[in-house]
Image (cartoon, rainbow over all chains, first blue to last red; front, side, top):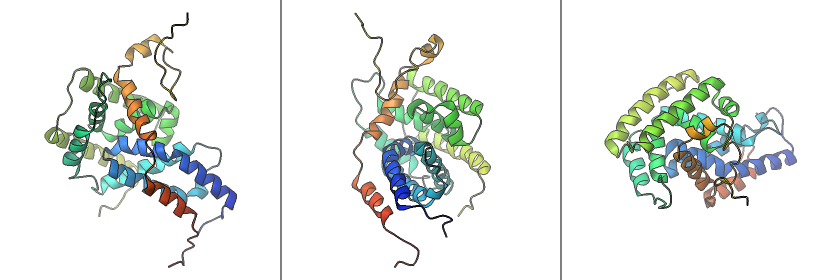
Amino acid sequence: MSKRERSAAEKADFKRELTEVVPHLRAFARGLCGRPDMADDLVQETMLKAWAAQDRFEPGTSMRAWTFVILRNAYLTDMRRNKFRGEYDEGVAERILTAPASQEEPIHLSDMHRALLTLPPERREALLLVGAGGFSYEEAANICDCAIGTIKSRVGRARSALNAMLEEGNIPQRSGDDATAHRAILEELDAVAAGNGHGATS
Amino acid sequence: MAKNTNSSAPGHSQTADKTSAQAKATPEWADGLRKLYDSVVEEPLPDSFMDLLSKLDEPQDGDQA
């Protein structure tokens, strides 16, 4: 099955690097899909896929970037299969609204997260990669397989949207708004995923 | 002396005052975005992840039941 067996040492290196990026995968996934349990499922799926595909990893390159690509694709696939549909409006809103907010922050992280989740996935991931993950525009473009200009534009749009929501206090409150946002997300996602090769809808 | 400029978030240094335009365009929530991310990164890893990682090592060459 596998083309070239990796040596035990190579596998050990790979595993060590994979282990190191797991917290980052969790953070990225949490930002993408909101629900901690689903995010963690996504990360575990990603870890298994990464392990299975380790022959394709080029040692010395960024494990974080490489695994983020896998996670992102898994997320898009899951979204297309409606895995997150239906549970979104109740689940996400509930959890995020009940998440403890730090009082010291001028802007509560729960507000932040809620606002983030209303963004279309492309913009959300672009902002997460650049604004939270600390990736350069170029790295983010590689992860999302698009042009640097596209990433810049997505980050810019995401920022203005968050500005509108957070600075002006215009944050969607609950299920109703979230459902609207979610529908928009799914529609936009169809367009994204369509460009990513076709997954048969089951 | 050396009254430091502003809070430097660990892990994400630099770029603060690269261009004043950029700095001006950075809203206060930008820091929250990083905190959101970092707060998850800093969470202790649930056991399920350690379990999964340890299972990766087990040889599973197809014909294992």
